[in-house]
Amino acid sequence: MSRSKAKKQFSVEDLMQQTAGVECRKDEGVLDEIPGAYKPIDEVMQNQSDLVEVVATLKQVVCVKR
Image (tube, rainbow, N blue to C red; front, side):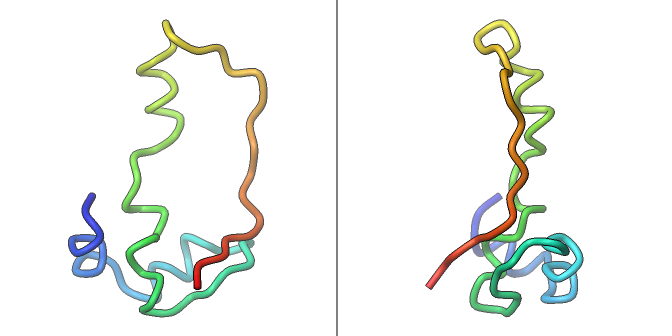
């Protein structure tokens, strides 16, 4: 989704819920980076299963955006 659409569709409250457990800014200045604006990674990886082999899964714990 585009950055402007994410800013219109999601609130700071949504951002706080979606980034629970991740150390990051949680304000309007980073609302365009909300996880809900991105395609679900499991779906993306499943759609390219004939091209890639998953060997590890990482969990985000910090996000830095100035």
